[in-house]
Image (cartoon, rainbow, N blue to C red):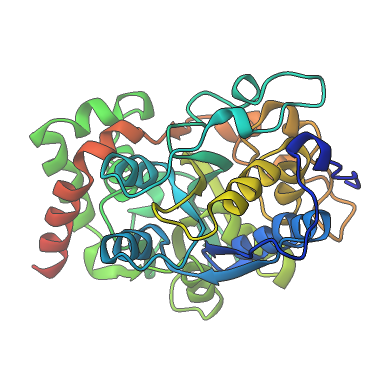
Length: 356
């Protein structure tokens, strides 16, 4: 996709040497590269505002720490939706007025162009990502794993697995693997018996799991042969397969999808420049461009049709996005309100379970 990102007039941005930098906290890896190539570089070229990018395993953690310490060095951060809501509720984020966001090319207001839930008091979504199961195809010459239940079947599909260290996503996956339909997962997980059931299922593979904390770890563990299956961000697996030629396959069945986006820490030093960055990068063309670097779907309806080929290839990106219709069969939307309310409690139990 080659589109001119001529948004200066709409945003009232005028390149000016006196403008401060924007300090962006991202996640690194392929995802961080999409922020650099689709957002930071063209934004700087268009506005004259330099973007400095740093990385964290989960930017929500240092954001909370720096605001509480009164030493805010980040202007904009990329965080998961539930973290954004929690940080906002705790008074740790600046409010973002939807009026600053850019309308779609046909004039549709931004608030109507974004999918439901993509804009909150302190958050503007940049992408829809998913947690997916993946495997090294070379390790399974005959039968191939295809479902959450297969991920937990050590007899049929032996070998180490890797999963994210935490309760979120893992409890839902465990219930689906135990036969709970996707549509009923949060109803079951909302009961003490459901939580017990999820942990009991995780018990069945606990000794065969390597726990990861940084998104770059699962594809590396697969590539190194330390694990044969992974539960990971779809974009990380896609990038490893696409760019490095790894024989990794994604299992879309049971994917759990969620939004990620920008927040501005309370007390950000360069607040006005941060708002300009948020507005510019969440306009349709940059969002579509970002989706060409990593297989996360744009949360703006008008951006979806703009997504072109995988960067550097003549292959369309569309079939690799979690939001593509064929990939949504038996998909589960992460219940963001559930995790805002239960995250601390369930992670405390997860950590106790892991240590036992």
